[in-house]
Image 1 (cartoon, rainbow, N blue to C red):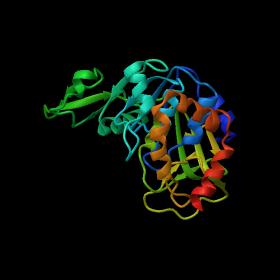
Image 2: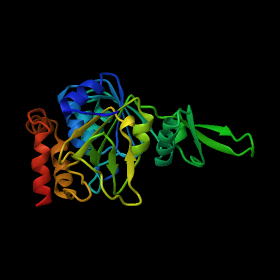
Image 3: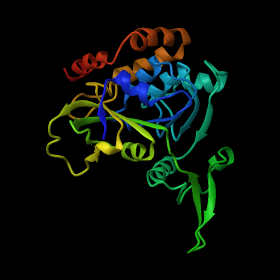
Length: 283
């Protein structure tokens, strides 16, 4: 069963140098607070996996956490490029980063294959496109029943999955509602999992038809971090801070400005800062 822990202790026990780490969330419930704790603990040589790396991976790459990125889209959503990501790819700062690019369908299927303990995912896709020319992990297999040629990619089996959710009960069962990405699949595929939540409650209460319940036995640690998804949003708790995403474009363009911001807002701040963000965003 999952254990309720502090954020520091959960990351210290779960994320190790050299791990493959999936920090998932799709527009909604992006676990910024947990990623910041990984940065504060100076984890290095990580292979970062995410369908849609945005600001939080820009920060982790710029702070030297990553040796590789496995992804299917990258950018500051609604704004433009990720400048720390680009700096690492184009100029090797703070050090070079390897890339493994996929389509969304491939990533989703690869997580599902990992969750099912299968060695690879098979699906219809990658027809008439160029990604297989630059990604040797995109292969093709022939269906033994129909003779159809299908795309195949290795299953994603991260060492660690980190997601943010709305609530957990005191037994560690986790509720996710609203826009969903591949949080459930990432947790089920991973060897270890940390879930940060807006609150821990006695009863998860009524749930909408699209709710995802992650049972406590699938999770190693549950951490209460109110506001832990900021500047993304948590349905029913606070809105997305669009101004932050716009402002990040200016901050991230310059190495010195980036490092100064990270020192002031991440390295010298703990998870309690997110509660203040949440109150301000909800006001």
